[in-house]
Length: 83
Image (cartoon, rainbow, N blue to C red):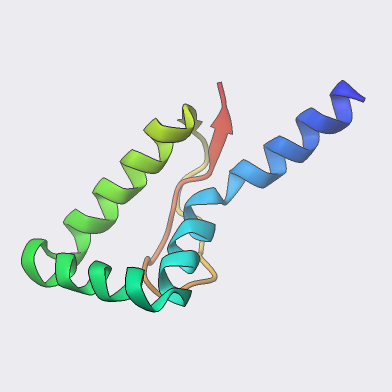
């Protein structure tokens, strides 16, 4: 059972950054807030900071980088993995 659960969480967290950006993109209120931040701070700064915060909040480590996202807000992302 533990082996299975570890596998589930490993696969779930791999692309959590992409999932969160897709969630922002699909939520009207969050997307409006995101666009305001991008306008004032710049897309790269906003995206980098969001990526860092996702990793910190979930207590994950960086994995393979350069992954192609399914959403359109980011151009690539780093997989995250459990510590």
